[in-house]
Length: 126
Image (cartoon, rainbow, N blue to C red; front, side):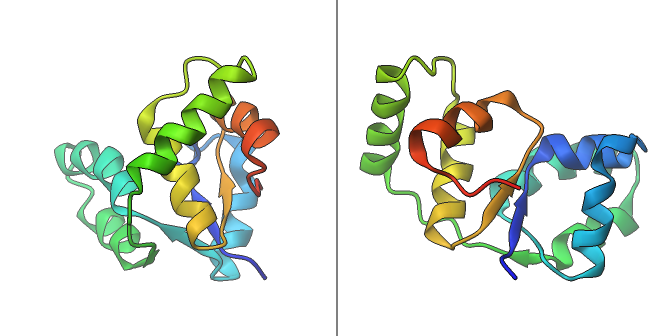
């Protein structure tokens, strides 16, 4: 099965106990979840403030996709998005998309930007 790069939006809802992310538990059980340093940098500071050391350890133990950012590709991705009318997509989301594509991962996100990018960039989304 394909690995799934789980975006910050999914983790936040998961930690809040929302039902819409129940699929994440199955992915965790099947050992299909991966992360990257960008996603961890969005999650870990808040978790540290909440003294969630165990959760941080579990997140940091996940398979980590190395970030090899190709800025020229990021620019081209953004141009494609803008041309198609997919406006307002931030650089962090483009980096996550590029990272997933580079490592053959699907992206699991609740962020509407990934739906827009999927149409234009042909992301594998979960």
